[in-house]
Image (cartoon, rainbow, N blue to C red):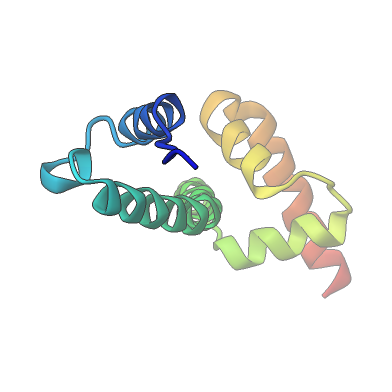
Length: 121
């Protein structure tokens, strides 16, 4: 029985690895085992960091809201409590966007939230 060598399939597999590791450095772009390892590790980091990006964005929104609240002589925690008590259904992302791009609307929301905390407390 003749010996079968993978030929085209092997070349295509190598090309797939090369394409996936484009931009990497040193052995991770030349040696097949290192390429496979680099792709695996990159996938692990990508999976982890997709979740960390959500965490980082939430921290950014809270920081923006804190600054906006300080400019209006209130605290972030008091403001968020007032927003919940007033029944305002805006999340932190939308509130921070309003604080940046539409300060008048954010002022109105802040006023409503402060009234809600005073009435319920």
